[in-house]
Image (cartoon, rainbow, N blue to C red; front, side):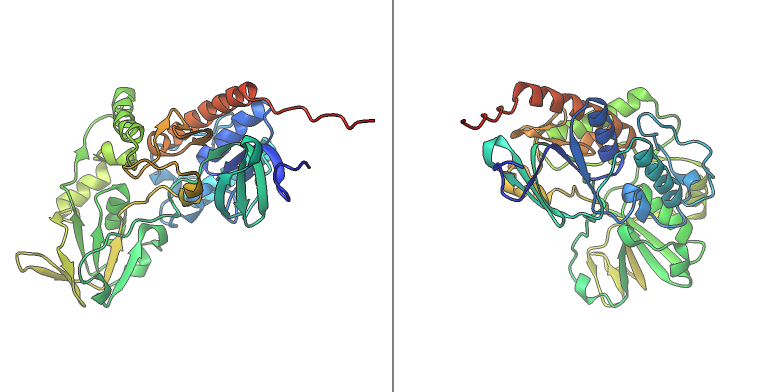
Length: 364
């Protein structure tokens, strides 16, 4: 221990988060021989996947890419994705000896002495030469605000605590949101609920046909452009459109996926529109997405006037010691894998360019 930060543990790199992005980063840091610690606030392996609703089976998951160096094989498509991917992440951590510390809540990252960063947490403080932030979005569900919202006498839920369709038996349910989660919720809930209503801010765009590499690059480029301008990132999924599979086609034909414009206000018994129409409801399910969980980085003043953190590659433009993976264009599983490798390469260059001074030998 040295005097860089009293009581802090010295390490080259701290990785915050042990989802896809964090584990990918730790894997590549280990391969590069860079000392690091992984701090994860979740109670067990699995990243955000461990909190997914039970009816989201592995067979319903789309676009899940394996972590680097270890494929996910032989998974039962009927098993809950939380169990399949949780077990896979646990096996991955063990195979590559990643030694994730959990549950650890990181509360703040600050400037320290001698060019280091101080990572403050519920398990103590680490003094690091660089930081890889891989905290994702699951911990910051976005709840829009509408007039009268506090008057609604029914139940309000978010995708983050969606319990599965059985909880909505016999209920009148309004689902708010135009993304994949909203569609999945609707198709499930409609089989149990007395009535469902789907509302979105914009008309949904359904994607028929293939979604190849060129389309994927174009979608990521749109998200990347916002991040480069310092704007809050949109999810990659938000710019790709909704896949028009057999289940969605059936939902469109049955009317379950008949969309209404979002309401203007809420009442004690439901929702109302400016034209005087209304819908009574027992439950409002907000499938309105998530925001990046980066409040712990606030002491570093990384945000731009537009509200986001400007990122070049994976590096925060305002601080070369800080890398963000699973943020903006790397918020998909394949994007997180690539970003983890890129962050490890960039960190290695930084540590090489900024070697630590060799302590002087004591005088004799």
